[in-house]
Image 1: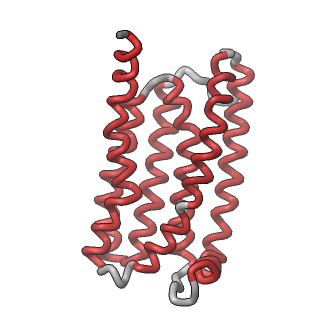
Image 2: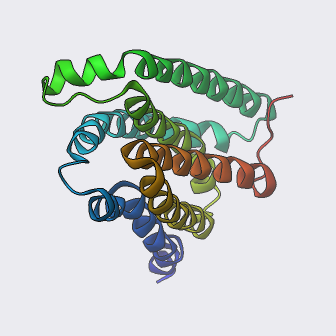
Length: 210
């Protein structure tokens, strides 16, 4: 009975988290198609679809990483925890360095993959891929909240980020079209990452490197 209670205690708060994820990666498409039209956003949808390969890559990395991370955290060694954060920062720098490529060569990459019918600016490609990279950075630190079983906090962050995304994409796509939609996605994923990082710093008893 206690096991079922623990499962419900940890699992139920994640329901809003799932809703927030859907808003961040799916529901916005209905909004921009209504504002800009499906024909206008076809290239955006293709870029977004190609960028989802990062979701699978980051998910695979995370599934391999978090059991090892939890094992290290269970050792309750401050020196090890500091080293974990240093490795995390290195990972962040590498990912952000990768994102630069898409702002300069993203358009050529999309044309190469999807064909010449899908020509789109480097900025749009860059914003979308940078958004996915923020998602990968979020996954890396979100494990600390899962370790502390702060599932309600996780859900609050994700759902809040999703609502912010809906507001931003409605406004940005109206004024700046597809570029605004891409920028909205990028900013929303960045907000999700920063809110998670801020709450880890404030609520989780895990030291940052010093």
